[in-house]
Amino acid sequence: MKKVISFAATPQNLLKITAIDKAFKKYRKEVKHIICHAGNEEDERTSLSSFEDLDFPRTNHYIAVGFGSHAAQTARTMLEVEKVLLEEKPDLVILSGHQDATLACGITASKMQIPIAHIDAGLRSYDKYNPEEINRILTDVLCEYHFVSEHSAMKNLRDEGENSDNIFFTGNILVDVLEMYWSDMEESDVLNTLKLGEENYVLATFHHKENLEKKQNLSEITEMLKRLSNNCKVVWLLPGYAHKKLLKKGLDKELSPGVLLSGPLPYTDFLALMYNAEVVITDSEGIQEETTYLGAQCITVRKYTERIVTLDVGTNQLVGFDFEKAEKLAEDVLKGILKPGRIPEMWDGKAARRIVDVLIEEMD
Image 1 (cartoon, rainbow, N blue to C red):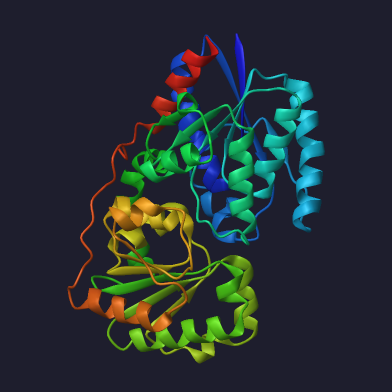
Image 2: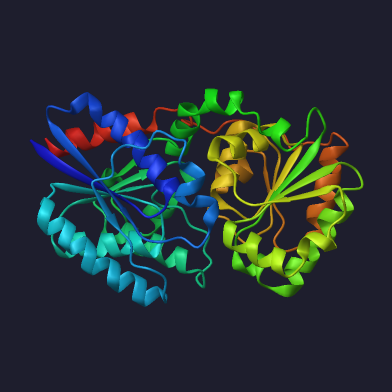
């Protein structure tokens, strides 16, 4: 029997591994699938508490290395991952994500000569100053199998010299997750809980430090949302650490009554809020994909994005840090001027099945 171990550095990536685990059930007599949750995330939108109502598979190993510099977290994670790999002696390692812990798992497995597969390989923002971009590039260099969710990722890998035989276009595994919890999203009562009822609303969610901890950006976000609340309600979700910190600073007192400030919500409630919103304003990578699949209008306040297909095909619009442009686009949506979008190729809820089928064939 073959042994495969999947590493996930955040609960969101653990959700993707959940889809992989379900796909491996078909081969349970041939493959033992082991799951390790490794790493820490300051963004509590992706903390386990927001996902406690979901059907996670059993996690066989948990690695928590605490906070610290990028070098410190990577080094500590490598030491702990080595212990897990020595104990389990897997035939293959699967990586999901682009965190420091993801790279640490990749380096350790590679030096132990264990083949590596990377989910969501080839995504590039070409922001060389972003630590996550460095993690993406280096992780892909270490991998034998690259599973990509969009054509731009295939091109990126080929341009970097990767062998086409090692690149597999399998679709977006996040869509598998959305399909798994679609009925829970539809049954969510979050609109009544937040007293939104049938009202139109704008959903805003930011978690990058450049937006929450840079005074100028935070001030511009606050003023933008206050102005938008003159036209409809605004729900502003903050990561747990930022919610507590900004409440202490009196952010809630700076907002108009039309802006509802909230901490993290359960994942399916969050999906329901996105699905029913007139427009979502965000700086989150994953939300760009989720809104495209849900058919929700999305405005991304970031300089770069690695999810190119959400711009080319989906409902996403990238504005950099131009908050005036973000506000203008949001107002256009409220007037009924929408960006047309469609679901990208092979975003059909079958990505995990394709990935596992390829791995089974390759291992044989």
